[in-house]
Length: 295
Image (cartoon, rainbow, N blue to C red; front, side):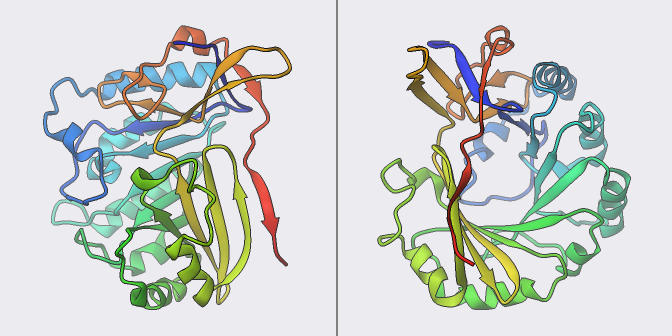
């Protein structure tokens, strides 16, 4: 640790990498290589780290990602059981259905844990990288859900409206288009005129506002009554900044990662979190706020 830690009230978001792989090969997934060798992966160690983070920040958000969290419902349940209901819990998934796991298995898991799951983020892409479960499964989920779609520079713009229409008819659906974060910089994070995706979306949906912080932003739209967001985030999650009030330079943490072996990182680049130092973290008001709101 170069500097003392600071984070937002409630604590940095804790992302948990499940200790088992998925069968997909999405081109935007930077985690796939980490699952080539499962040696050392441990749900027991992950559970210990979950308990440690809960003890330090009992109101932080948890996110399960992978891999594919729903590929092993029994292990996912064990890890989820470690998280008290003081936390919001999000699960990133493709909702995989196969001969080994039915729609009813997924629905039963969601029903059993609906008091804990804040939202299921379901990957559905304009280009079909994975075998997708039936869209009707989304409408049957007993918890809130959001559809996520990564857009690259050469995405088929003519497919935007058919894609939105596909999910518009599903009750409770909202869409988040995501910019390729590996191409996001502090200079283009809030760029508007040169952002082709943003300009394409403004042609087909009603722009309603912008929220953001140092690390990420979201352009908000209404598409025929359905909530639509265009999300951009930097490829790292630590900001180094000197507080003018006390003159101290802090590592400001937005994300903490629990890796597949239970190790705890303070950024996406492999930086290890000094957990003892994080117990003394300084809190600041969350700087994510609406910057533009249009009635």
